[in-house]
Image (cartoon, rainbow, N blue to C red; front, side, top):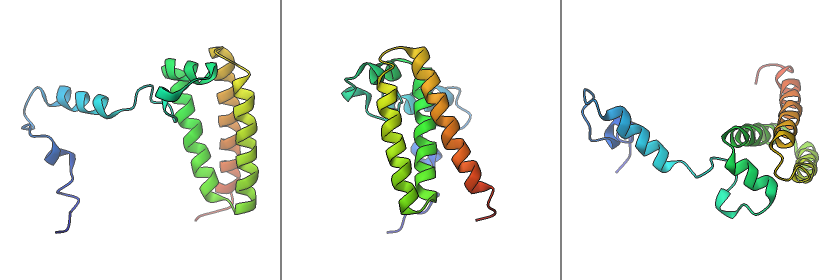
Length: 132
């Protein structure tokens, strides 16, 4: 039996008529139920360090963490193995620097914005080399 994209559509998962006034509320409840707690790029249930806990406790920091993690993931997929190792080393150094912020949300936000800027610059250099 093959699964078509139609059989896996969101509409097929929701047994609610489109005209139902409850459909948006049910959909929102389903999305919230499926979303991980804290919504950071790491498992907040295992967060032990002050910087990790602060990220998990702040929606703004969690969003920055997800953005940074996404950019990092894209960048590491676009570069050669040697460059990937350098980027991974820089990420480990950045994580060590982030940990010095402890629970200081201002320091963490500044650290995330700086790292996001670095990753965006590196991606911009790749993108500038032409179509893929």
